[in-house]
Structures are given as C-alpha cells and as structure tokens.
Image (cartoon, rainbow over all chains, first blue to last red; front, side):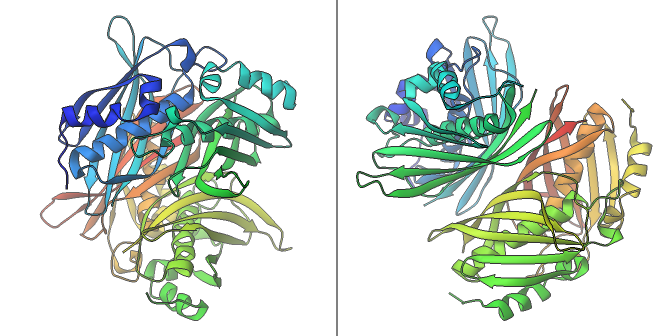
Length: 136
Length: 136
Length: 136
Length: 136
C-alpha cells in the first residue's frame, strides 16, 4: 500500500485533467479526511446562475475518494455514491470535506459535506454525500 | 407548467455554461426520456486516463433532470441521486439515457444508463444512476 | 463458486429467520434475476395502514442480493443500496423483481422494481432500488 | 404543523404494527434528532446468524423519518434513502441515531448512524444512511 500525504495527494489531483479544468485544489489531506476547494466561476453554472449540480457531484466523488485514499492508500476505485442537494449553490468558493466512516479491508465508506463559502468566510452547507470506494 | 420539446430542451442545455464547458449535447428528448451525449476529450480524464467519475455524475445529474422535465415541465429542482460505477469509461463518446420511472405531482423519480460508445458505435454500460427531482 | 438454482435459493431464503418472519417467498431465480413475493398482512403496516417502508427496503435488499447470487454464486455481502419510494404500498401482495446490471469480478450492481399486486393481478410500481453486492 | 415530542413520537411508533413486530422503541426524540433501539432476537437474523440487512434498512428508514418529524412535524412522506453496510451486525441491541442535516420548506435531508451495542454498552457502527423526507 502506497501511503499518501498532502503533497502526494496534490500531485494526484494535479494529474487529473478534469480537476485542473474545474480548478479544484486540495487544501487538507490526512487521517481519513480530505478537503477540496474550488473557486466558483461563470462556466461552472447552470441556466439560473447557480453552480451546476454536476460540479457538486464531481466534488463529492473526488473528495470521497481522496478521503478513502487518506486511510487506505492509492489503489482505489470509486464504487458509487449518493448525493442530496440541500440548496442552490452560490458564493465565492466551494468546499468539500470528506471523512472516512469505516475503512475495511476491501471497501471504504465515506461521507462528504459540500459547502459554499462567501466573501466573509461563512460556510453554508449545500449538499451531503455518502459513498463507497473499493480497495483493489 | 411550461411544456418542453427537443428544441427548447437544447436551448436550456445551451444556457448552462457548465454543459457548454463539458461539450454536452441533447440528442433526444420527449415522453419522459432524455439522451445527452458528450465527446470524450483529454481534459475530462482522471489520472489513469479514464473519464473522470465527476463527468459521469454530471451526465447522470443532468440527464435525470431533463428526463423529469420531459414529463413534468421546466420548474424542477434536482433533489438527489445515486450513481454506481460499473467499469472505467473510455471510448469516443459518452451517452446518458434517462427515463422517468414515476412522475408524481411533487416528485419525479428517474433512472439513467450511462454508456461509452466506441468508434464502431458499440455501447458499453459504464454507470447506472437513480434520482429524484422535485417539482416546484 | 457455488452455483445456485431456484431450489437452493429457496433453501437459503428459508434459512433466513427474518424472511420467514415476514413471509417472503422466492418465486423465480436464475440468469441474474430474482423475484421475491410477500403477502401483505396487518403487522407489516405503518400508522396510516400502508405497508411500512422498511418492508419495501427489506425486499429490495434481499432481492438485489439474490439477483447477484444468480450471477455470481453464494459468497456475497450486500454493500449498500438506494431506494426511492414512488407511492404508498397497498394491495394483496408485494413483488420485488431484481436484475443484475453488471457482474464484475469483485462487485455486482443490480436494480430492483418493487410492485404491489392487487386481487386482479395488476402490478403497480411502488419503489425502485439500485445496489451493489460485494463478491467475497 | 403538528409539533411532536417524545411521548407523541412514541405513540406514532406504537401505531406502526411493523415496528411493534420488530420491537423498536423510541429512546430519544427532539431538536431534529431521533434515536430508535431494537433488541436483537433470532427471528431478525439472516442465514449466517447476523442481523438481516432489512432490519438495518427498516431502522434507517424509520429513524430518518422520525428525525425529520422532530424538525418539520408529522405530515411527512419518506422520499428515499441510501444505506451503506459497514460490517455484519451482531450484539444485543441495535441503535439508530438520525439527525436532520437540512430542514427545507418542502424537503428534509437527514443522516443516520446504525450501531450495535454489546452487553458492556459498547457501540460499533454497522451501517450509515442518508435520506430525504418530503413535507406534504
């Protein structure tokens, strides 16, 4: 099992072209947790001006998997996830904070909170997710 | 309730900057079904060269909601979804085919199949999703 | 890998005390599909007289796992599932029909339709589910 | 909106024949939280002697909905839920602790932790769930 630290996790994120396209950055990583952030910009929106749900589900997918990686190493495959949207996402920055709930030998289950952060730094929860990552 | 047809649904899709960024197109719409396609390109990939799971979850989110719109009109909010990934997504094109399972007065439940399509036109299922869309 | 047929699957079901308590029966099994039925009776209801959602989620859980068993043998652990309720469940009998979507080496993904059947034999879909079963 | 307290919530639970069949009791209720317990007995098991997953999904369904009721009153319909199983459930008692994540005007999203409790009172998490309850 390859052990990951923040620097290595940032390298993995940087090796994901889709994460670069969206502008995601890894701001915290370790002990079964991962925090991804992403600045809101116009081409991440849907037709009403809110952040597209697909951006939130991308963040959930990636943060859940990185959190699993912070407990179980790099050889992982995302098995699936559920996401519930709570309110329209606006604000300056999106933050996805995922935590391992249980790291088994073959499966890691994680939860993720996705918030918007406004200019004053206030977080507002806008989606919650839960997912399973397979250890390969 | 605003009734949508393919042309109007394409206009809604074109009004989503994030869908333009990813290059999604609406190829079929009506009777409680919607089909979105998207050409695979390098900046949609993750670190191993496969399409990022976040692209698949975006397609699921959007196709599920458009399918609901094909039954219940345009005033919808995506409530949540579950996606299970089946195999790494490669190929030339991604296709998301969503269908309404039940259109109630306040909630529409849909399912979605997400496939990759290779150069010969062969479809390979790579993810399945299920979601609920609220009628507002 | 132990191969299951209808008779063996019925034996497994009969070996589940909780399935006996609820009165579930296996009416079809094979080729990656399983159909469970259960007669509605008063002690399966919630406070408004409808079948309790927990009965539907039990049926989904069990049918999904048996369908996986019809493709991948008996050494399975249910990993997780999502269920969306469509309408209150009434009627005489509940029927859960699960099918394998993809049987991989380590994971099997299935879908399940749960219907009520009235005295005339008419099926009404009341819940849909999707789940992942791990091969151990 | 009818306001619920612990005593009234216990009355609602007692009015669910299926909850009586399984032996569920409401041990805490209020402020957007609900805790259900249930003593493990032989007829709640599956073929390997563990508690059947359907019992855990029943607990998740019910605890999620009661937690929503602790924030949004009694006129609720469970929309759907996702559950991930973490380990086989054994022990003397099952405890499901659900909390509201976000109570909107038309939808309440909750999370639930399901644990087994052994004779010494030690809790072991065996499943996590997330669900949406519609306000009607």
